[in-house]
Amino acid sequence: MRIRSERLNLALFLLIISSNAFAQTPAPNDYSDPKSWLCRPERLGACDVDLTTTVIAANGTMTRETAKADPNAPIDCFYVYPTVSTDPTPNSDMTADPAELNVVRQQFARFASRCRPYAPLYRQVTLAGLRTRIASGAGGGSLSSGLQYDDVRDAWNHYVEHDNKGRGVVLVAHSQGSFILDELIRKEIDGKPVQARMVSAILLGATLMVPRGKDVGGSFQHIQLCHSSSQTGCVITYVSFRSTVPPADNTKFGRVTAPGMVPACTNPAKLAGGEGSLRAYLSKEGRTIVGTSRLKPWVTPEQPVETPWVSVPGLLTAECKSNAIATYLEITVHGDPSDPRIDDIVGDLTPDWGLHLVDFNVGMGNLVEIVAEQAKAWVAKSK
Image 1 (cartoon, rainbow, N blue to C red):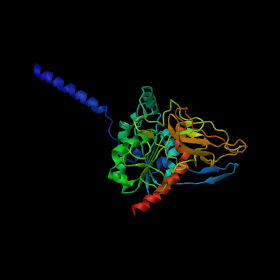
Image 2 (image 1 turned 180 degrees about the vertical axis):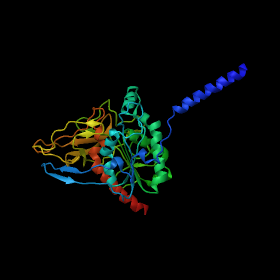
Image 3 (image 1 turned 180 degrees about the horizontal axis):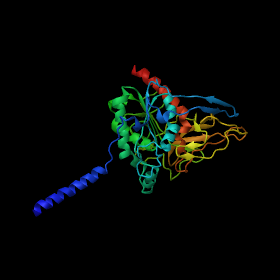
Image 4 (image 1 turned 120 degrees about the vertical axis):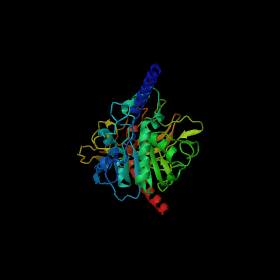
């Protein structure tokens, strides 16, 4: 009886342990449920926003520009958003809070004018979780594995199996999202048959690497950097810093340590290289992906701006640059105190983060038009 009782107690103990372990493993998300997506073509959701823009010329003249989602777009876009969740837990829940809705509005909704949008919710590392990781010395690479990666992988696999139907697709991401898609591309796309459907990947706010003097063979083995808007199957990537505040020793972005490798940078304003003019789309209120910065009037004397977005042609230029510390997209602001238009932009966090909060905003117009040209090239090639 004593032996049988001990065996029973042991079995009960093991059952409790296994039950606790099971309970601590979150169940996979159901990406067949539309509620697991922020945007889908048949349910625009967070992508259903007003994209109307006031275009302000240097002389203060204002014109209005409209844009809307194209339900007949020839390709798809699959988007993974950056670290924005304000949930107090290390990983977020699957509820779309204002933070998630805002980042889609800032970074992805405009792409729906050129491609059918897919944006999964995922249990990302939250802002609180990221602060804990940074304090412990963990780098951005730690974001590319764990629950957050598993969710995005599951969403991608569901999309490929049930939604793609052989269409071309642009992968779009920023910061945490870029770390995750970097890993996903390596594991699920690079060198595999599905790579033929990848129109391009736009991975901003994270540092990819290439061998010195080459544009393939570092982060990816079969996927090159983009050099023209008619090139497909390639990657656009950059981290942005002001020309007046370049990366310093404590920079969070723009450098790699792997022997023989250098950071990758592609300029959306001039993919072939050199300096080009950026077509920025900026929030009227000075809102970024994680907050709002106080703005001066867009024009002087002040006139009301009645659209949610503002574009300032000619104010910003960009060029990929390297200093002794990092490689980055250098953003130059060409403010002129003698004209009536605003002379600066918002988006700075701290010097070591650069213009991370507006990486997408500063090049949005360029990126959207690149996707349009790549879509034409991919459709022509696929025929």
